[in-house]
Length: 141
Image (tube, rainbow, N blue to C red):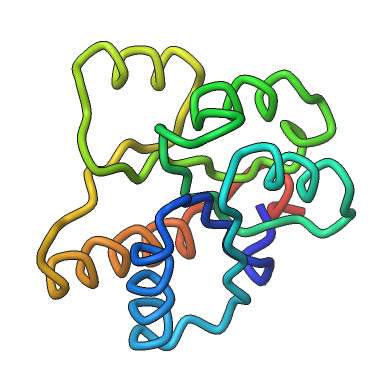
């Protein structure tokens, strides 16, 4: 985990992208925030760059490559797995089976997007605070 790396947000809803961009700006997050509208574009970026992202926020229901399919590909890719990038689902709703499936794939968190802005702000803040304080195998020397 590279705490100074970009925050990756995989979200196909442009309104949600806009709101999330506002949240990160209001929180004063220094990391670059990179948005991807589908899982395939995000996977191309993740496998095609040497940059180590700080964290991945992924929707589940997306065109071309769902969040769950993307998580499988990230988890199965040894180079990406060794980067220890926290991978979180951040989605509109959840069914119990989706949550079970996500955690069976070593997901680091599953969050339902709050509908109220202040609650969304508080949720994102707590996630960023937690992962900023957390250590991973590749940031302990």
